[in-house]
Image 1 (tube, rainbow, N blue to C red):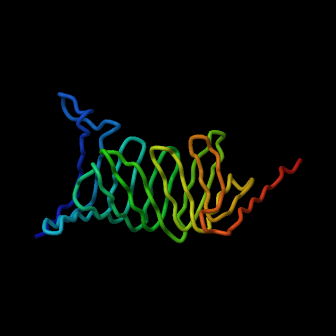
Image 2: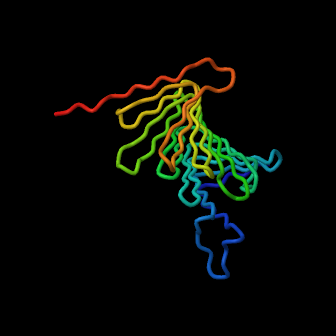
Image 3: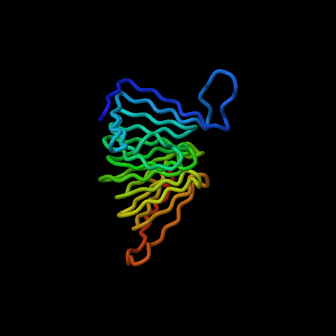
Length: 196
């Protein structure tokens, strides 16, 4: 048996943050907004179309989402079709992604694409941009790991390439290295400032 719902908006209230007064979305609450949803009770699968999931500063947008129910305590949601994930001043974009929830919190996002892309507005107003075959964002630690032909640049001033790049969004720093078993070397290009 399956049911189809249209224009869905759901707010999941995190129990420790819910007050006695009228419910309002708090920073820990998860808000789910979708154009439609289909629930298959036999298979315990929920499908959403044109979905937006928000929690605090994290916002996930996709054309399609698939989940095994509305459980945000311990679940992984599969997203596809023009996926955009906004996190901590950064943006991840791709064709496919998975978002993991633990303890009613978004803890990580993994994106795949040709390529998967990342950008972050830096404190000095410039922007870091990156792309790779896959990108993992650890929301709790604010760490972006770019893998498979990874590339990262700071507004074209310099760029770094390697099989794996680890970018720390809070500190605005990158660590390059090779994964175990890889013989790929790191390549850095620095463009010196030209005096007028």
